[in-house]
Image (cartoon, rainbow, N blue to C red; front, side, top):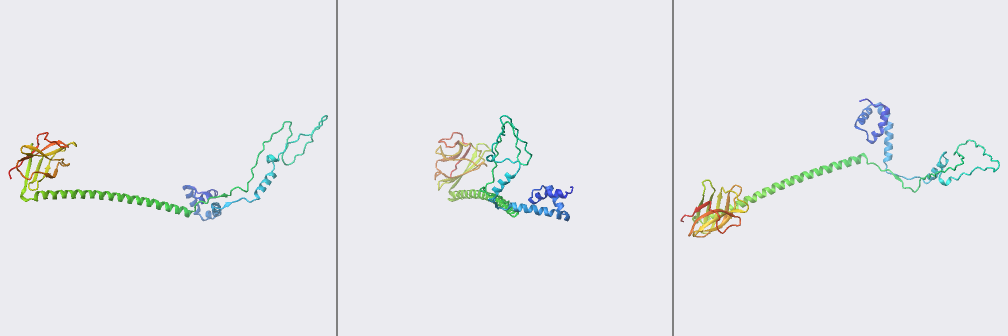
Amino acid sequence: MKPLTLDELRELAPGFVMGTLSIDERRAFDVAMGDSAMAAALQPEIAAHRAAVEFLSSAHSVTPPPALKARVLARIAAEPNTVRPASDISPASPPVQDEVNPVKAPAQPHAPGPVSVQSTTPITIAPVLVTPVSSSAPPLVLAKPPSSAGKWSAAFLGIALAASVVFALDMRSKAQTLEGELAEQTGQLAVAKQQLAEREKTLATILGSGSDVTLVRLSPSQPAGPGMQVFWNVREGRAIISASGLAPVAKDRAYALWMILDGKPVPLALFNPDASGRAVVQDITVPTDLAGVAAFAVTEEPAAGSPQPTMTPFLVGAVGPK
């Protein structure tokens, strides 16, 4: 980079004081200021510009003095070749001439002041109004730019505010994540409690009456079909079924459990398997006596149920003698 001359540096001095130099100009100026002789030569320039900036940045109102108006008007009137206000311009009088021997007006010697030109054609002079400075005008107030300390304070507050926003957003994201994990764990805990309650109820149904529980196994009509077990608590008149390998059914369909009592099908329960094909149904009401009960069967029926089977059962289990 070519070193700058003293004159070039003096031209850049105002921008250096006000901080408006480009990156390259500031770098060149800083390099020049590294020379003690150049710095000493520029110091008066820099001090003068700084004083001017500080003076302009002071928030003091400037009010014109009362006598300023009179001095301005007097200066305007004293200036040569200056058009005066319209009120000061009087119409030019034509030269006096004799009717018989017109005599021309003697030539006037050239003198400083307004030049008058005589012409037979009238000259129209457009009045020019000069608006004087009014002493009642509002004072001019120069706004003081923020100091470097104020700029640094504003920048620091902006950075602190941005950091606070980022921190708040981060904490909010973490809180939402924790809330989601807590909700998921709460749901899993509720499912586990429900499963535990169902198992306890199953055990209570199966073991509550000792040897009065009858187990009925339902076999599929096809070798690779699903399977089911019926736990019948004869003494309490309750039953539990546990099935596996069941195919999913449509939303308007369901599986139906039937009891063949006295040669007629009696509907006991409607159920649907889960995604794994398993199904557990509790608290099924059954007779408290095995008399007349020949078997249990399963069919697929409408979701609202049916008074009679609409298809041949695909799971059947005979009830043996007690």
